[in-house]
Amino acid sequence: MRGFAGDGYITDQNQLSAYRYRGMTSDVNGCGWVAAYNLRRAAGQAPNFDDVRREMNAMFPLQIPGPTPVRKLRRYLRRYLPYRFVHGRTAVLAAARESKAGILRYWEGRTPHFVAFLRQPDGRYRFLNVCDGREDFLQPMEDFFAARVRRGWIRALLI
Image 1 (cartoon, rainbow, N blue to C red):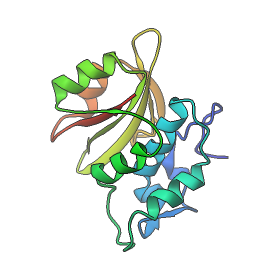
Image 2: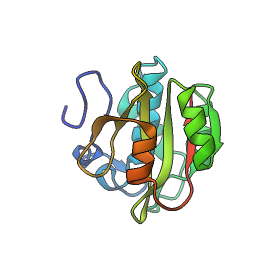
Image 3: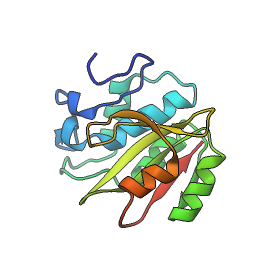
């Protein structure tokens, strides 16, 4: 299926326009459930992507378009895996060095965005579903922050 890497991670939500989430198509508004799906895969689980989307969508009784709040993502993930929640640039950078994988919540330009990442053996990170056309790439976390996390707050859910 388009939008997925060979190892099953979702790398391009732009290919998911057939799936609605919070009253919109997932290509526009799906980064929250996509990141949750990717983190569960990183934890060794084998969720069905559409089950993740449906379950998270059901957490919003009113289907009003909008981003997934961090608190909703945290509540969803608590059902499936233990994670550590940290916020602030310095704390997130330090915690990511000790984590297998995680989700970053930051501002992509003027839009809040969730991105899942996997720490690699060489110390770089594989970032999944980044908005700029680089949907699946390797980079040091510090470089990612320098290029992408320029303003606003940063939060992370880490395993």
